[in-house]
Length: 435
Image (cartoon, rainbow, N blue to C red; front, side):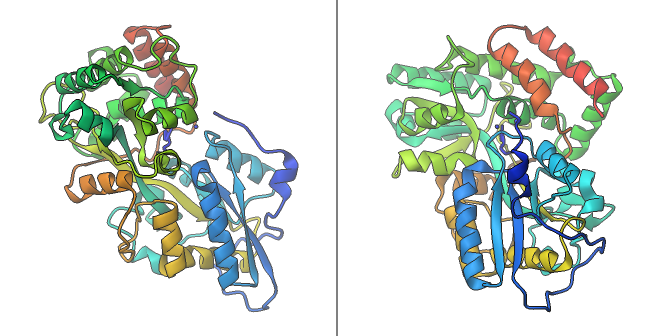
């Protein structure tokens, strides 16, 4: 979700020197690890593909090392918006894989031969229902779910109060436009659209896929039809509904005159300062909003794609585990693998680890044993949808280049450089050639 998007869904690679620093040295091809017994210092690295929590993970590394003096953990960042798939591919090509790799769910199966099978680990039994599914291959668990994330339309509650809007009533396209008009009448710009490809094609566009049915079966069938070239987006209700909502958002966009000029950081300012009432984004942005507005209240509304409030998606939020952490078994020796396992256990079983995950990273835990109360209003809003059973599962297996390729087409549509038919043809062409 990370994003996502997320959605950042903006690609660059680190210099070779930065890849080399701190990575595993000797390889092991075993499928399980044994505890380190030589009592020698161990250095491990973790690839972080969530730039917004880099500082928090660095603090976690320090706290972990303090509790485990023989283990040093370095957090290797990927710039916000960088492709996790391209980064980890480059590191493996260099024989320089990190001990722990934070990846998107769909990337885990692509590297399963290089990752440890984690199925027997203690935390597997404590994972929330379904939290491990996206990182399973042939029934085996290869990924540790870092957190549950969700996305939709964020609202600034102060602006909603000023405009006298009850956000619970926004369940159709007409009610969304009515809310936009009220915000505008209150002297505030209604909404801002982030132009990043990861947001447009990693989070917004997939709503057209997830709304195809009331479970992942309908979604996967439609993606298969797109890949087979038998789906016609121009006549598809879900796609047309999403585009109509996107058109509505475009009409009331703060940056309507120059929709591609703003950066992610500008949009955080827009919502946090009350310059706009709404922003399509995910709960991962809370730390940046909080840094600007320490006392404000925020929440989510779904993205309505029709004028029938009972239609699937109009009252649900997209949410699911957005990042998984895998442990390398090819470039890191058994001591490093054991140390990496120890860090994951520390993160969810120690009070210090839980505090960083929930209170510092503002993550919605993917584990039942963590009972800390969320203080983050965006996280609390997502969790309220989870508790109410109003969740649309995110798609774990989108192709790695989906947001970078189709993000450019979504940007063209946002800027008025193509029409709905052109966008539909671009999406269909992409899926026909998808690997």
